[in-house]
Image (cartoon, rainbow, N blue to C red; front, side):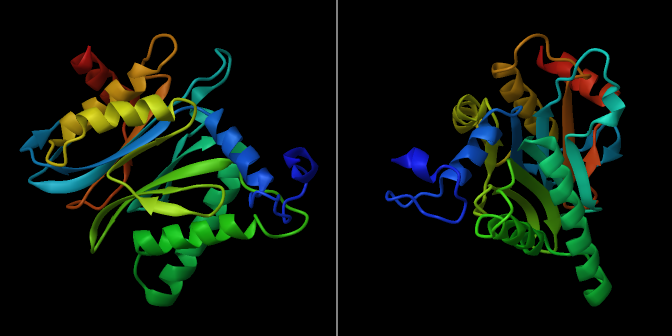
Length: 248
């Protein structure tokens, strides 16, 4: 019975499902594993700046590419504004469309209010765009789930946004093909009161748990943001290499 509704985006099946959204979630589940962790970072010094007792968020993702592809041409973690970063699992082209729309929304907000868009407001705008594509003719749902990390006046935030347009705030979450194992790993080891380096180590260990082959600085990406600097930063391969050596 479900198959007869599989090609219709705007028609519910008798069980109350929009089957195309389920197919979009399948595309997400086939994508590379991505995760985010929010924590309370309490440390005196890390290798690129001085930090004291501040909150923040870490994003991490697999970045497996063909050996002949230029790795610099592919970014899994992207900036929206100075204080917001996003990672995805699913279809890369769909992610690029959403990033473009998200940056436009953020700039419209800044042009009108003369201040950066709050993280929750940005997430609502992205969720609205994704939900609109589940009830409009001639389009399809976006085949991506997003993990949004950011800091604003109300503190650090980590949100997950799914193809249906639903969004939730998380302390730690994962999307992609290894999300179930990653979430189980995070549930066992999550600690709200952690140092920044501990959170980065936990993110790397979580990725490594389900990683196929050798995990190196060339096939993963890591991004961080803290409440003092309020600047989202993607770690360099050299930084990632140092952290990988620490968790081995």
